[in-house]
Image (cartoon, rainbow, N blue to C red; front, top):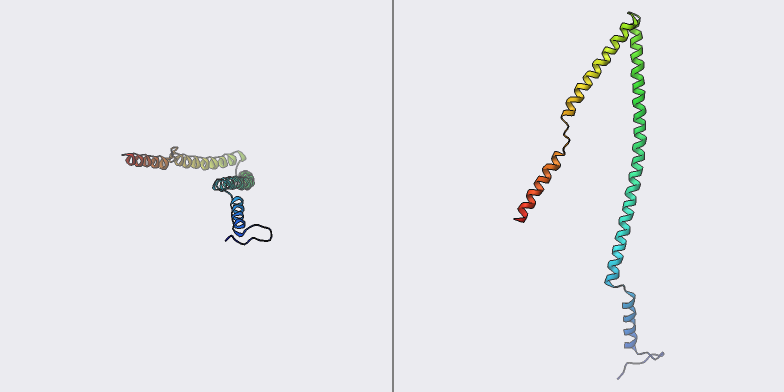
Length: 150
């Protein structure tokens, strides 16, 4: 006995097979899904790179403003040191000749400069231009790789 026909003349199994075919044709294939995932990952990566660039730009602007302020503070400090130096020189000029007062103030500044130079030079000798830790880590990695291949 054949399945009952509907009013439109299509039997029930034929209708079910048609729906299954429609569902199969509407679902993407595995290759299409993998391609979409690749496109989505590519888009996500590009968006992350753009976000990183924007953040770096923002931080660079902040750093630039901070550097400008520090430069201004350094200039203000230098002007303050100059004016205090002149005040001390003219203050000493009230009790001695102005030339001697200037010489004494200059000698004090020379002593400060010499102390900073000696301290800076000794610290500079402690600086190593080679990245010692990185070199040591690379040597360890090379030894590990050699033992891995044996």
